[in-house]
Image 1 (tube, rainbow, N blue to C red):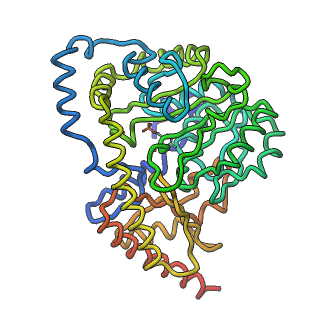
Image 2: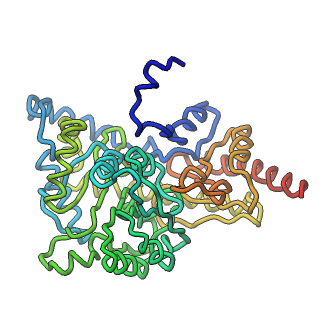
Length: 414
Ligand SMILES: Cc1ncc(COP(=O)(O)O)c(C=O)c1O
């Protein structure tokens, strides 16, 4: 490869790798492969007709405005609608506290830009969302990791990590990506108290909160935040920055998400976003507003919940039916993923190749750790939203063959 450009790359680009999942998605695009790999919504739940009508209406009624440059903060009616919707979950904010971003992925990048100096440490769950690690890596983040179990981040391990003085915590309280686990109510309170005691801000990433298939809704961290309660002005805007997205409730292709933060933080993020892309697509924001309004979004989320609950149940049932008894898995109450820890000594990459040979794909767990982890290698992340129920059953049957071969081959070698 020519060194002409390479020798000129900025230091921050060294060691940056492309997403293991994006690379993997390329391999799994053979039509015969059943993919539990990407975090893709089911294509058949996209509200295509509603989008078609909305596009038509936007062009008829706001043609020029929707095709023009717009405010960096985002389309005002959409920000107001988001603020109203979040208020139903106790997140009280004004449109001024909402910044529209081009996906939550951009929100993570802007937050990295805002908060991380090279060498700063960020407290993350182990495992955590790969895309956040990618975004923060560019800014030279180091990681302090806290393990998780079925009740989410293990708060008993938190205090020792907080003493090291991380710049902020990045937490996924609902149906975590990749493990599908949910932070219990008790641990939410513990986490908030410790964060307050040590003065550590929290980035709460919540793309899946509305996709709950069982159990009660739990208050988001932004609502429990002590600083917010002390201010007692009714607005959830203290030491927690909250992120959510339309990617899983409407469509990821429109690249629309939002950040909720105190107004001065939003002001700074707006400057950073101006440098990045001026603003998120005006047209997409007008269309998303038209699609979501008049109660459509709520109706649609109900339909998605129903479809994904069924797919989750089919996957859980198939795992029970086909997988060997020594393998366990998480039981997600919502979201898109479940997590399978294989017995000690299993090589996830070998298992991945064995699964591909059976025309089925998953994401090996090692890419979800801020710090290199032997532990991650033996985990599989399985997505249950994308494939149809029949395919899920067949995919798990095929995967079980690869798993058995791997396990019993391993045992034979011992
Ligand atoms: C935890 C988490 N955060 C952020 C994102 C990025 O979402 P978006 O499509 O809004 O960029 C995802 C996508 O899967 C995710 O799982």
